[in-house]
Length: 355
Ligand SMILES: *Cc1c(COP(=O)(O)O)cnc(C)c1O
Image 1 (cartoon, helix red, strand yellow):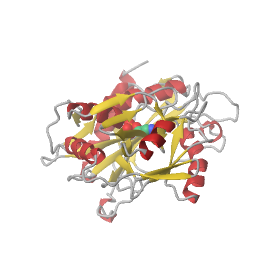
Image 2 (cartoon, protein in one colour; image 1 turned 45 degrees about the vertical axis):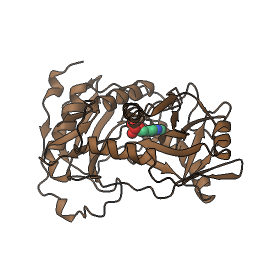
Image 3 (cartoon, rainbow, N blue to C red; image 1 turned 135 degrees about the horizontal axis):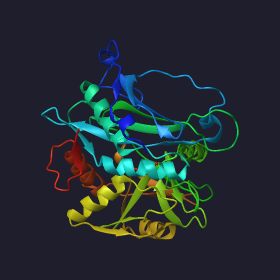
Image 4 (cartoon, rainbow, N blue to C red; image 1 turned 135 degrees about the vertical axis):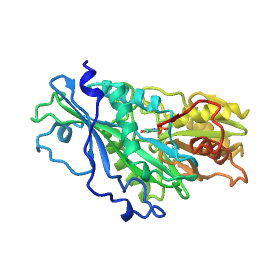
C-alpha cells in the first residue's frame, strides 16, 4: 500500500462558517455538523489523495453497492476541549483498530492509520471553534466507510469512500429508561457481524426496538440468539449489572461489540476498588436478584451517552423495578470518566491524546 499518496491532505476551506447559526445550548444529538468533512476514496486497489472540504451532500449512482448490499461501517468517538483550549481525543487508537476489524469482516479495505489519524486531527484543528469547553460538551466524531462501486451484482465493491464528519454535542440525558429483555429477537448471532460496527446491525434493531417502544420500553436488552438466556447488550450499548456491590458484564464475543466505554469502565471500577466480574450473565439470575433485593443497578455504556442508567426491566410480561439509589455506581463512574475526558481530573491511565 502506497503511503506517499495519502500523506498530504488537500484542504479546501468553506468560504463562510455556519457556526453563528448554531444554538450550542440546545443541540439535539447528532443533528448539527461542522463546516468541513474529511474524505478519502479507495480506487484501483489503493487509497487516493485525502481531502478536507466543505461539508455538503454528494451524488451517487442509484446502483451504488452500499444501497443494495449494505457494505457500510462506522465508528463513534469524541473530542473534548480543556480550559487551555487544547483538544483531546479519548483512546482513539481503540476506535481506529476496531474500524479496521469491522472493515475486514465486511470485506472492505482497511484504512491506513495515517489516513484515519491525520484526517481526524487536521479536521478537528480546522473546525476547532466548534469544539466547546465545559463538562458534558464534546465533539462527536463519526468516521464511516461505504461501498461506492456501481452495479447491482452481489459482490464486494471495488471502490469505497472513507469519510469523517463532526457533530458538536452537549450532555446527553436519556431520561427514564425502561428495558424489555428480548425473548425472540436477536441483535447478533454466532458467525454473524455483531462484533463489527456495521450499519446493518442497527437497521436490524429498529423493528424490535419499535415494538418495545409501543409497549412503553425505551430499549431492548439483547440476549444470546441460541438460547435467549444470557444478557448481552442494551440497545446499542454494552450493559452492566450491579448485584450487591459487584458489577457484572458479559465478556465480548462474536455477538457482543468490544466497546471502548465498557473496557474503560471496567478498568475505572477496578481502580476504585469495585469488584468487577466479567462473565456470562443469565436472565434467570437477574430476575432472582431483583426478587431477593440484591439487584441494585443496570446501566448501558457507550460513547454517546457514556453511562445510561436503567430504571427497570420487563421479562416474560413481568415488570421488575430497580431501587432508586442515593449514590449509584453508574453515576459515580460516569462522573469519574467524564472528568478524565474533559481534562478536569488527572488521566492516570494515559487514555487522553492531544490533537
Ligand atoms: C458502538 C457500540 C457500543 C459502544 O461502544 P463504545 O466504543 O463504548 O462507544 C456498544 N454496542 C454496540 C452494538 C455498538 O454499536
